[in-house]
Image (cartoon, helix red, strand yellow):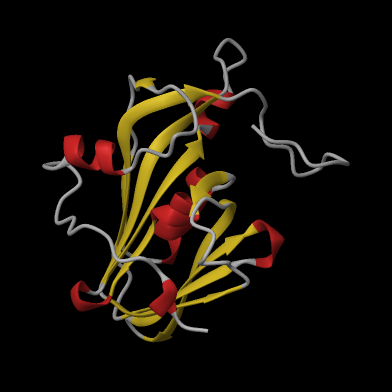
Length: 185
């Protein structure tokens, strides 16, 4: 159970300078996207920071083909469509999903469990991102998906970036973890 099955991706030194290329590269084919008026950009360097990132990516949709582990560059990148929880609190605003990239630097190892790497079209639902320090500042980043899927990153230190890529699409529903049946948004 190691990360060798994860598909290598493009070299992405900076989300800001290569935003146009990344938008093309991250085409998730999920919905028609329109420009996003207020882009979210966060950097996580400690456990409190990653908790904020986790709150923003809760219930994000991820396509297996858009998970990239770059072992030579010690980089892990994942494209996702995150549910915009900030706009959901305003009753006058429609629900939406934002095209977003989540990047981790200084990654020494990547392992996964209960994820079918052969089905590149499979869609995952990201529930949480957590960091546990093991030998300061090193530690383990855990990305937990519904259905029991997990990606574990062994990091030299926590260095993550969450960046909206400037586009969003309408979401029909707000994710509800307390609903009796499965709901998709």
